Length: 145
Image 1 (cartoon, helix red, strand yellow):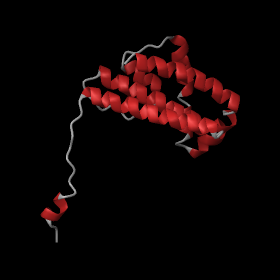
Image 2 (cartoon, rainbow, N blue to C red):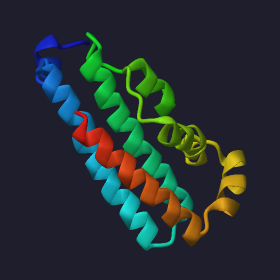
Image 3 (cartoon, rainbow, N blue to C red):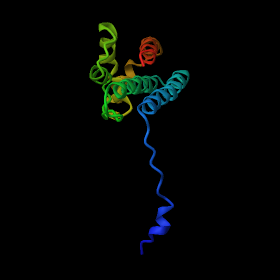
């Protein structure tokens, strides 16, 4: 039999976050994932390193999405370029072109059949070059918030 008094102790208090708190959530979790990116590079797990780097930029793009929209919950998409375009962000042609290609790395951790193709590209040198560009974009996105 259902006992409402007993089950009520499991009900959590719902907290409504401000827009600033939502933005801070995306920035803070992006910083946490940046640590994962650096750790993966250090252990030579280059494919996952780039997956995590994509996640960092995706979360920063979502912070911008929240900043520029009435709603505080961004769409559940992984395309960094789309999120930035929806936020009226233009990082310039070179960076946007890089991000169009970099979107490939959001797939590597999600779809095993895609992993082998990406894995072959992820040498130490390639990953290092990608991370240097990611660092530049990451810094830019944080400064623009």
